[in-house]
Image 1: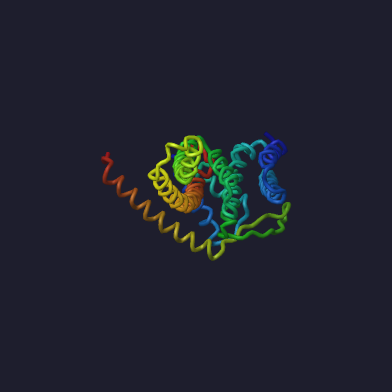
Image 2: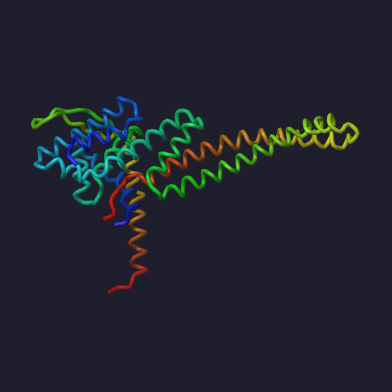
Length: 107
Length: 186
């Protein structure tokens, strides 16, 4: 898949995963890489940037199995941004789908 | 690459970041490794799927320098941010360095023109000192008019420089967003 495609949607994916519940970094990375082929490490710089832009906050929580984990929680600002991105994404994907229908020959 | 090697490479590549920030980043990756190991993966597997520590460091540094540029846009900070964004990929060499050189050349030309115009009366005086018999009022008044024009250009250039600098920082941001990732080709 084209590299530029993925870059644009990664931000949307991270924010979308945090809408219903808080998650820790490893969890976010795995959820994304299960479906999209990415260098997992590149999610962490993105997480830091989105945190600096105040789209979410972080807190530490003890875990039964091992060391405490850093959880990410969406802020109101982040939620607003997510919905804006979703809308843009939907318009974008509708546009692309229609262009494919119009331009590509059926089998 | 095992965990120790990965963390060490990342640490070295991030040495320009403030201590606290660097430790915080390393902590995130330590956590990633330990959860991965709980799930039964080997350190090598985890490092492999994380990707290159140098690429990760480049992305972190680019964000860091862009932030600094926002606080104080000094020439040094802008240059460092330009360099960091270029570091994200060769693609950027063309789309960042190209416009950067173009803008800087245009600004430089404007400033040289302004300074040259402002200096013309001085040149007339120098000329007068060397060849007193060639003096003409026309030269004097024309040079004064040029100097006036030069001052106006200089004032304009102050605004143009400020405008271009902020515009360019915004462009860098847009660009860093565009190429952020270091994602693999699928």
